[in-house]
Picture 1 (tube, rainbow, N blue to C red):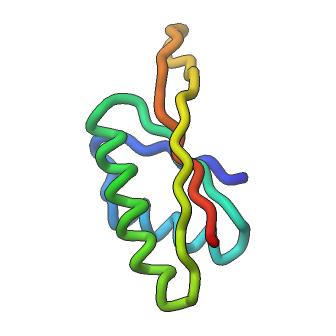
Picture 2 (tube, rainbow, N blue to C red):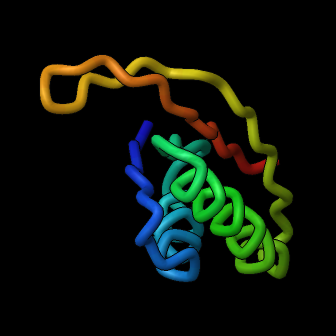
Length: 86
């Protein structure tokens, strides 16, 4: 499963394009976001990606979960979004 790291500076359209492209090749993609701004961009990207793959006959399912990430020798709690085509 491919991992896309999303930051608060990520362009949601670019992330959505990456999600749609990866879902054409595989069944699911994982997005990882740390912080409210990054989670906001990730959720927007999933919504935009849904519009990209809908004409292909796919619907997206998003499963949110917590994840522990080590950033600069410090453990941080992040959000992971597992996006599957349905």
